[in-house]
Image 1 (cartoon, rainbow, N blue to C red):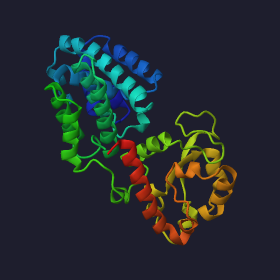
Image 2 (tube, rainbow, N blue to C red; image 1 turned 30 degrees about the horizontal axis):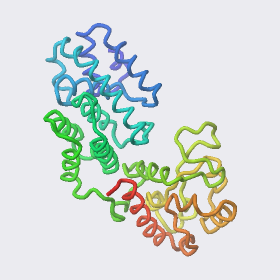
Image 3 (cartoon, rainbow, N blue to C red; image 1 turned 135 degrees about the vertical axis):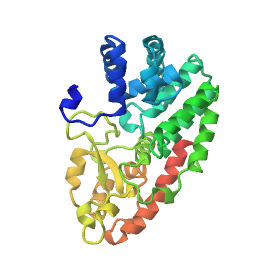
Image 4 (tube, rainbow, N blue to C red; image 1 turned 120 degrees about the horizontal axis):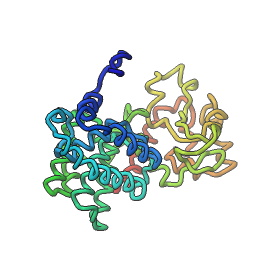
Amino acid sequence: MRVNSLGAKLRGSDLALAQITAKWRNSLKIFEQFQQLCTKAGFELDLGIHLRNLIAFATGQSRFLTVGGLPPKTLQAAWKPACDGMEFATNFLRSNVGIDSPALLSSPYVLIALALYGHQRDFNIGADEMQRLRSWMLLANAKGRYSRGSSETLLDQDLSTIKQGGDATDLLERLRLQVGRLDITPDELVGRNQRSSVFKTMFLAFREAGAKDWRSNLAISLDHSGSQHRLQFHHIFPKAVLKASHTSREADDIANLSFISGKTNRQISDKAPAEYLPNYIKANGSAAFLAQCIPMDAEFHRPEAYKRFLVKRRELVANRLNEFLGV
């Protein structure tokens, strides 16, 4: 009633929450307490993700359509295992994968698959299997496993595989059937922008390669404090430089984006790479630029060479991503 009074469009999770809380007294408080625990651990998630995880543990599938017919006892019995599974998923991402924020996920649905995976094995996972699970997670994230097509259907396929005893190798095979090939090709980067799933993997790959801010030499991170150090994505060729000869979409190409601090971004302003790169390289060397796969040949740094720059950087980025992903 409160949501409708605001004229908001109801989501499936809103309706599911209404149905669950109507028959399970004080459940909203229980859900929100766990949501807050996850937030304190760095994973601020919509309550709908926790509800979908609960449904997955209660029914083996992720859709909210069955909520109305589930008795309170079924939901209550599934809640503790669902929480344990989610804690495994967030710990796994943070400690084994290096993902410490949901901002680096192409879809939070991967948490639900990981939660059930850990629970099905009673959190007893060998070293080799853990490595394969890490590979699946990174590849599913980079390829946007749950952010293309029917995400619920794809999640249910993976949940079914896990429930039937399938392992990370089986999950990888499902991903392969969906996307064709697991490696990243330069052509796959054409036309992508900062909203692409592979953009988040670029950050992870560059960070692992030792990428640093070009001015302060602080390692790139999502959680730097202070506005001057807070991470931003930077157009290597600023939009103002390209405005006369290229569209905004061409300027936003993923191969024109890098990660630097807000202060460095403002310092560069609308200067062309041929103007600002030599000064940074003279001061700190080229390592910070090589870590982000930026071509060092001066011929690529002029505005008239922009398209050739994109082609070269896509090649370098694809190689770096495949090295990071282990494919």
